[in-house]
Image (cartoon, one colour):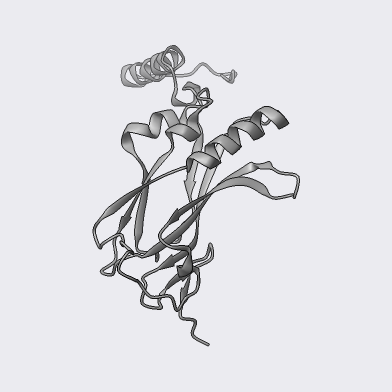
Amino acid sequence: MIRQHNQPAKFSHIGFALLACVCASGLFAHALPSRAQTTPERVVEFKIPNHVPIKVRLKREKEKAIKDLTNASWYEDFQLEVTNTSDKPIYFLNLWLILPELINRSGRPDGFVLNYGRMDFLAFDTRPISTDIPIAPGSTYVFEIPEQFQKGWAAHKQRDNVSDPKKLELSLTQLSFGDGSGFIRSDARPFPFKD
């Protein structure tokens, strides 16, 4: 808004040129699309604490499809790359993919469980056997939503008229190195516990 003054303003040639540039850039700003006007996308938030020695990211080739709010089969496209950044093998990894705005009948958000490794590792003292294949240090494993969960989600959407989520949150449940150590809960508390 331009305020009018009783006395006429005195502009130098430089001041007038500067004012003209500012006005012109304002006009161009309205003509060009802003980033705020781009198509909204599904938000993916990684809520794994920094001290957990894994690196997580959506698989590059699938990221656009996963984030596309018009993609009704985003859960079929979902692929998550998890890289072991520690110097120890990971024998068990349990992650939750949570849909925070979709609250189910039990009052909790819907979601999917992503598992790697034998469920026996839920007990801290479980040790590897010959058939356990870990995620080696520096190696990457790609998680997908298991097919039975995909079918369950499709049926839930149709039966209960549920919308696709606008947000996804990934949190840790448990990580085991197979030597009695690891992390548990969303705050990644290290175990064995120290009193």
